[in-house]
Image 1 (tube, rainbow, N blue to C red):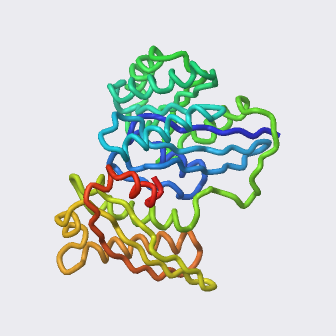
Image 2: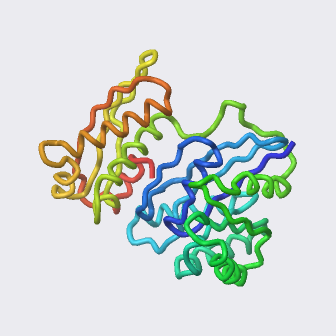
Length: 294
């Protein structure tokens, strides 16, 4: 039996959370087209034949602009320093850019302390012609002496099983500490907050997604019913107005979509009450970040 941890790392918006969700076969990590959606480490457990793997989804490695971003990068770096195996994700749709080079720099610094296998995972191969992918692979191959290179499409479920098979031989021997029914270390409160934030991000543009957090004010389980009161936190009154929308329609849509996701994942009915609060400059406030789980 083998057990080990695999850190999923890379620049922002390269497909880390989508890959984790595909590996698990269910959604536990929120996804959007906007960078820096994942803010904390998210663990998902895969029970493979002869192995148990704890996958660690991380915030994108980027140049931090706020205290929140600095905490996000620190969480990603700490995770890649602790993991047994690293997945470095890069896109098949483009040649290496400054964000990829920066992510590799963070990775090399961690490997200097403790060498480990690094699997280069080329993502989004469903979006490119296979013949055009070779030059991209050649450029990525020059950046580092990768242990393995595996092209995948998490969206199309292409080559993901092979990625798992390639990973298992590099895991340490050991019994898996998690029961067969364990999929993630995320609590229902945390999952609920992240589902609300995902829908808020998807419903807004410009600066609003980056200034948005979610606070669960109340979470009560009564049999097969979850009663949840939550607040979406923003930094300015104008952002609050955007989230609420005309006659409260946008906030209502966010709440409905989040509730449906919760009911599917939790396997129970959900009653959700949603508000919007303004906390000025919360991304730079240490106490607020701790209260919000960052």
